[in-house]
Image (cartoon, rainbow, N blue to C red; front, side, top):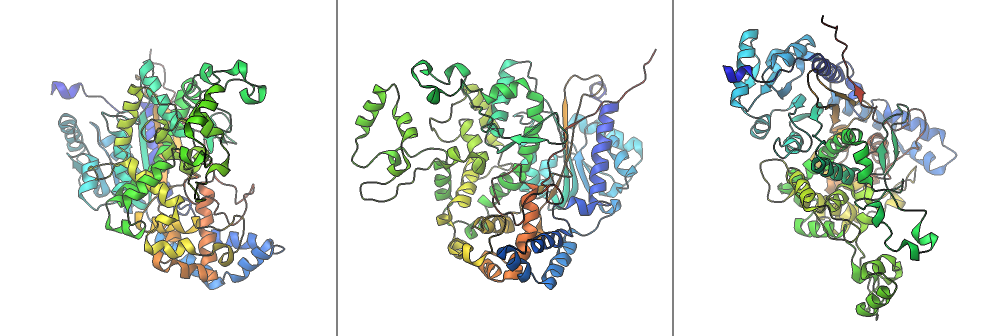
Length: 608
């Protein structure tokens, strides 16, 4: 028992307060405030219809309002009600990491109305399980499920889904030893969370007192956030997002002294107003803030892109999206590398171009970067794809761009490769992105294929071919955004891949340092909604074009989809971009933003 006596305790006042705040919010969202947990509210269609109707001076809006049948609006609301359903606390099931003192969480859960029969605690460490078992036995509670397996093994082995999953990790995100990224992916890859559920995650800050650790984590965090169109702010509770790193003029991976090698020989226009600032250094300066932002954004991307695409990559259902996965991977990888041949003017010799550029102090790479768009025609007059789309429009390919910035995919001169040690760190992170057990395809390949499918409809399988050739401009009213095939791809993907979306408005985030400890903890309470009441309103891919031709069903779907699109407006351009039906306003249609991360600090009485 001596070894058990040395195990850590988790009942410090700040830890206990964090536990209570997280679980109280989760239970309330799934029961009393369940309507708020769903991303698209029950009255959303009526609100959109009313706003569209008010724009009757615009013929497109008037047409859309006229075509949207009242019986279809009522039918969608009934369908949504059946999907969202109702729950009481006694209906909810909870899975969490037991640790040595599982009754700390059990007591809070039971106080909130959760039945002990619906509480599942997991502990894979033999020593810690012994103490956990003793803790539960002493409590005399009956019905509690304490398992001596990892929570991930359970997710892989059973079809059970939980309303609340509480991952109170022992390490940072990512962590090679603790496998924290893999744990997150497994929640969504194995559909362990109910279609409307809450994930609670708790990760520690890494020990950035070591320069190598600070560099590794700052490079990954900066590379991940850099391509995003918007970043978090950390001081203004009324406006918690701002323009992305590129809009602020930050570079990525370059020291300021290296920005302009020949600045003294360049004009002011060429050299700019001065050297840009490396975003990695910005992240280092406010590491804890950006690290907290990374945690939330990364989990949202795992749930909506990485995990469902990894699962789909080995599924027979993949054939409904693409016939050749490897072709999709190859296409996706080309998004992070420019095709230099496309920039060579027909008849010009590459060696001569290089000699001319070197005479000006440049290279072939700089010649390619400065070439005109008209150079992408070969000698036979055929179009040559310049590729590199993720470099020029990074927010549309954000995860792919991040992988390239970490040196894990592509070798374009636009990316400054991290050190070998940092690349190793990033590679270990990427290796966990497909979850477990190991898959035939890497997460990098699955992600590359996702972006290829999103941006290149020539790869679409036969089930999607009619959607690729559908005349969106003529068959769909032009409302807030121009209708495109973007309306077809992700819904078709969602029907078979089952992504989940983070409800941004209802997310709460905390940070605290437990009494007697020095490590900052980052606690996220993240409601997730699979939005089946939106995606399943449509027929499957073979029949979806018929839904588009039925103007009323089309309008119902687009009105409802607008709720998802508004939800991700400031945070994810990776899918459903440009699918708004009504414009943004400062009222009902104001897109939500993450609330600032709250600091938990419990005042304890002084002890004489």
